[in-house]
Image 1 (cartoon, rainbow, N blue to C red):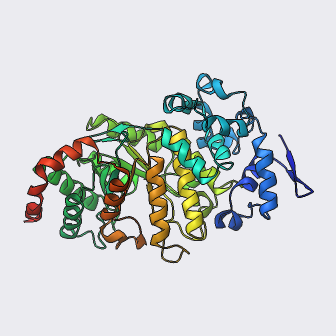
Image 2 (image 1 turned 180 degrees about the vertical axis):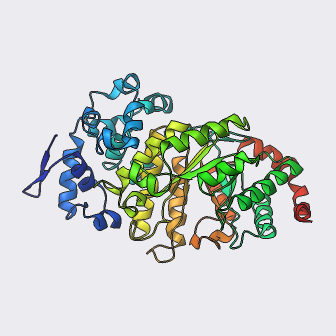
Image 3 (image 1 turned 120 degrees about the vertical axis):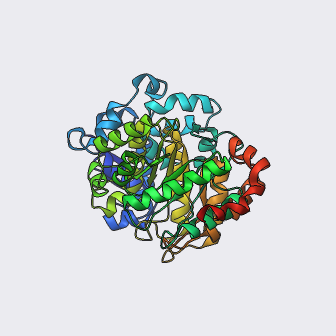
Length: 445
């Protein structure tokens, strides 16, 4: 196993293995301090980044951060690695890879072809050497396009997940929020409800409510009820109209076990949902820096590297949507607006580099050192970086989950600022059918 060293400010720093080096090179965040893996100071961090820049990319193929025979996520990552796709960058160091990504030669087409050859750990490593502008510039080159009833990720487009959560799952309250969102051009990525009760009867009721809405108004949309995947599976087996299948995932087997899932279960439900033949890309994954640490399942990795490994698992399923819920877990992991902003751009960059259709819940909890000005900044930067979709929450305040996100009006702002439009199928429907929506409450009669 390799060890690494670098000199900074006249002091020699030693890093015992690749995992330690990645953690020490990671920009400061409270979760890594909580885990005891963060650099001791800025000088140590700079030394680690210098050492990391000289690491050959091939080393990541030789030294799994979590042993192959102990972790099924590691097995997915390594078994799916495409050596031919990796070949163009196989001789590079991490620093040279950064320079290549920023070069004129690294076009969107080149990066799309490269994606199957990039390990998540390589993506995490190169992101640690990048400034915010670098993360934006590279991600903006990459378009990852997915399709169900709408097409997400096209150039010049920005989509939204309409999130009509209600503190009692009241259908009238949910439909009122859906109406509000549709009138403000939100919902082309998915209309997704986080249910209060993870019960199959409740999930089926909400799925049928949304499907009836879709059919009544001929809306090109996909729906999702974000219950546990086993509950959605049971609803599917009972004949419920399941569009997208949702699950939170993480970057280690142990962390996924804490979520009550494993790859065998994900495979089984994915295959069952594909069998419905309702759409092409059918999975919806949410992730977040700190999830592995919160489950004491991070294996000594820094939280951003663990997060990137979750993307390595996600791409096994060619998902419709992947969403980093960047500030949701809390200030124990991302302390303030600066850390949340950096993490959101890192996640978006790493996911896009790995070939995923990345969205971001631009959000924070009320006990974090952050406010809506921080979120406006992150939203604007993600728009410039080509994010596929963001959240649309009534008033930006989720009254069920009790956190702050982005509103329907925030989506209108970023679209107007950057000249972006909704998904084409949804845009065409809005042009001809939106005036019918005020009668939507009749669905509950």
